[in-house]
Structure formats: C-alpha cells, structure tokens
Length: 329
Image (cartoon, rainbow, N blue to C red; front, side, top):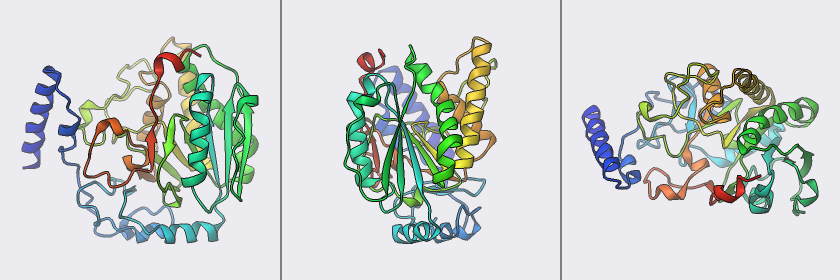
C-alpha cells in the first residue's frame, strides 16, 4: 500500500510540475519510512542519555536510521535529562559562523542575538566569527559562560569560494584553538535565526541535518553531485543533508572539514566544481562516514515550504535570502 501511495503521489507531483502548480504541500503527504527498533536501548548510543529517547512517540516520522542512529524530533526527548547529563560531563560548545561581505550587515546581529536566547542555553559556548571586516562585528551582550572570538579571513571574489573554503578555516581553528577549550563544535550559516530550543539533545559525536526540502522525497530527487569527475560524486546515498548545520565532537568535525577541503582542492586541480559546493562534499563524506546522530528539519526549517504536520516546533528558521545583492561580495 505504501508503494502504491508513493507512486500515486509521484505522478501527482510530476503533473503539478508540468503545469507549474506548487507541489510543496503534496510532498508533505509522501510517507516517511518508520524506525524498526523497539527501544532506544537498541541504538548505537552517542551517550547514555540517548537510551531515554522514545522512538515510538512519533509514529508519523522516521526516528532512527538503518545504522541505528537516532533522528531527533520534538516529543522524543526529555530536555532536562540531556541538560543535566551534559552539565555533569562538562560539555562545552564552539559555534562557528562566517559573515563575509554584505552578509555581516544583513544577518550577523540577528543571528547572534537569537543564539543567546536559544542555542545550548546553560552550557559554555564560544562563538567563532569568521569575517573579512572584524571592526564591524556587532557588540553583543553575552550571557555568563559565553564568549566570542573574531577571526579575520580573506574575502574571496566568488561566494562559492567563501562557502567551500570555510572548511579549511574551520579545520585550522579547531587545531589551533577549539580543541583546547571545547568538547563539541557546531557550524552554522549566518543567514538563519534561532526561534526555539536548540539544546544539548543535538550534541553527539557526528551530527548531520535532514534538509527541509528533501526529507519526504524519494532518493532519486536528491541533488547529489552526479559528475563522476568530482570527488563529491555519488550515485545514491542515505539522506540528503543540509550543510547549513553540521557538528559533533571536535575530532569528528575536524576529520569532516579536512576531508571536504581535500576533495574541494582535488576538484579545483581538475577544473571541477561540485554541484552544491561544500554541501556536495559533505553529503559524500556522510555516506562514507555515517553520522552518529541526525537532526530533523525542525532544527533548520524553511517557512516557504508551508504547513507540515510533522513539524511540531521550529528551532531555527531560514532568514530571507537576498542572493542578487548579497552574493556580490
């Protein structure tokens, strides 16, 4: 029955595309697979508190992967248990964000202010702001246990290069600084706004995010890089991950960023550029090195998609995109 429904919806989506009718609402009716584990104790646990996850509390969505990693949705976890455990363990988080060119004025102040309200509240957090204009970084009043470090980077002539070269910058600062002070790293795009709890339940050894526009779609719609000449080349994968957020332990994030940077540089030497730049390389890495925890699209939602019954809360929202003006660096 599930296969029949998928086929019917696929035909409807194709017809809608042909006649230029919006398809986003229809996509939401494509059923997700279901977790076949009876209990979270059967997961490959990132930490002991993950055993408290209620995998059956969300029968409308997929709550685990086939390699037994949890997919985190509202209603699955007790925030108090996660916060207590990570405070007891002494977890601390580095947040990296790039604000280069016009992106700084357009987004950074709002992004940082919303971080203060919602990101890892109660844990030590250090913001690492990468920018070509350190003097323009806004003076944000930081909460206790919070600090900020501003790192100057060169302005690239193309936004694609800014996006791709951040992998080297993140790897370098993990080696020189973060690994001495923080247990975990989360990397964010700046054109986003926190709107709800983005807490310690998201911490894990290797953390990836389901892309809001693809999590209901069949795999053949995923926009992997299909160019066999690229190091990011993939025939198929597990999910389509969004590079606007990725994280994990400092060791895992360093390994990811180093591998992605190496792939990007090998492509450059061969005059190749991956379809979606660093995101294509991130998806290739994640299919080879499975994430230990996956975040649902609640953790990075695009309101232009419209209503989805499975999105019960939104924790981070895409900010309005002004590509025509902002990507002229």
